[in-house]
Length: 95
Image (tube, rainbow, N blue to C red; front, side, top):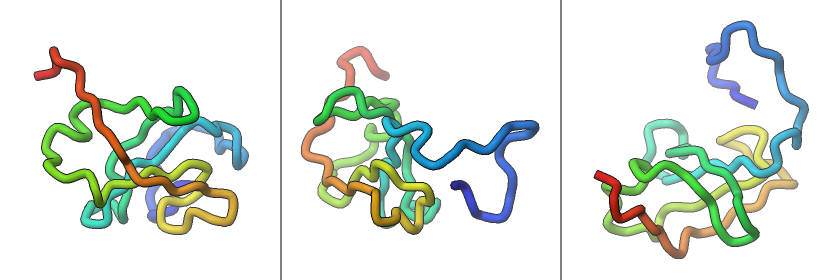
């Protein structure tokens, strides 16, 4: 799925498409990583869990979206689902 011309995992084994259906790509069009900003996990039908640092500098989440089921960041494909982010909840003890 990762196809930027460099290997990221040494000694790993490729995963078949749809092997990890709960993994999401949190994307922002101004991200230097071709849209991909952070990863996350779908924990319910409506909630994604990610690291707090992914959102601690955002004032406006209207341009952020979540891609589920993509096999490539730049071409989500016909089976992918794209949703806007409606709410961000950062743990009160995050610093």
